[in-house]
Length: 275
Length: 287
Image (cartoon, rainbow over all chains, first blue to last red; front, top):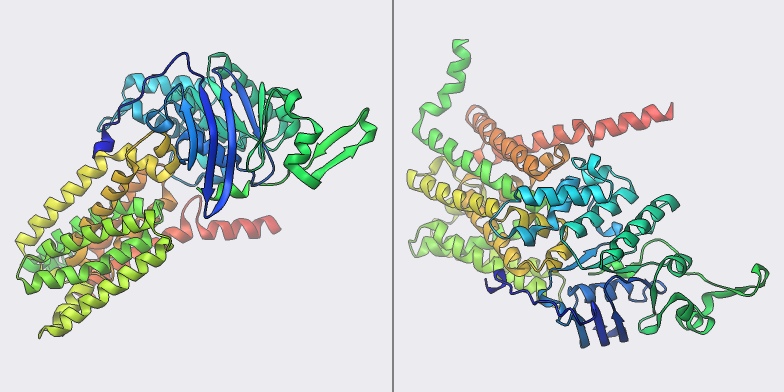
């Protein structure tokens, strides 16, 4: 019952939005992640990249406070993730039960539950907020649809609206671009850029390296441990990519200079099945 | 016309049939509403196990001459919380752990009954219900417990919704996940106790899962699914009692049979998801 009354930690405005020090996590005797050190400021748009099974989902879930690292320190605005309700985690689409009987508006409402409080129903103010969130992602006209009736891009936008309704200050998106066509990808990217201008820190896991290179402020490259963290030009250099992707890196000399191409394809991240 | 009314009214001119009707209506509403969460969260096996685990509790209460629901509630709640704890912690897969507890407790219950003299009669009642033996005191208790369950479902509606739809969101919103999971298990134990006399240990699962599954095929929103589920439960209860009276079938199984037929009809003819429409579309597309 004590869990019902959670004291929310306040935010230290001086502290970075997210800082991780020496994060180490074992799962069933195997090391899933180690030596992760990153520090992220408000308003930064960060890509988390690495091959399948590199621990991208795991990293996001540690930030969300859903998984506890065995060693190391995670701070969100200066405090452990435990009591924060300012972190939104948008799951991979393959992890969502799209047959579940809920409408778009209800899914967005779920983000506000903590703001609404126990034993209460969403009030007028909450619905104003929910409608605003839907408008920002351009989904107003779909608010009464069952979520399974939407396209992939629309589904992604609904969850983004949920994060907005939550008034999240850190938004984590797990493989949001997987399976989306280019125009849907661009629409989501545009929204993320708009969001970051409002001071939200955003972490996006993706296996699309060129996307990470072109559209993100910084990149976290991992393969079970942190390989590199910095701006795309700092991170995407040959030694790093070979370290992360090993034999899957190929040289394509004809592209004017040497193009390093790392193949990280396909389908869903197997580690996402867990959790 | 008069014959028709006579046909409808006759069964309930008996006191015990009328009491049976009230009891089955309570079960027909409460069980399917909680059943929506059982279906959405994939807790069917757990529900069935819990129903069987309650057996030793019922026998114990019988031996100690307590009211049966008290013993059942005690054992059911304990087992529900124990299963919850095992599921969160142990290295054993959850369904195997449930299976171990479930079979062991049921065997214990049967062993306890076999020591009793009135073995045959009572075991049948516990397994398959004894709707027509329900007393007014039983109905009052069922009603009280049923109201408690419905109030809890209402009070924690949005929390249960999130927990069922997206457990990770429940965690990032820092909802009391363990408390909510346990609460759901305890509600499940209470509902099983309520249903015990109506359909018995062996068929409780049907009242939890069958109406809610039919409703799942028809509804696009959870509140609608709950209302439809309860509607199908009530319809099954009433029609089942008539079937029981006129075809001379045990009432519990008659109710479950009606519910199963309703599910079958919905499964075939549901507007969006119905199997027949799917079949028709496939044939149509081939041409």
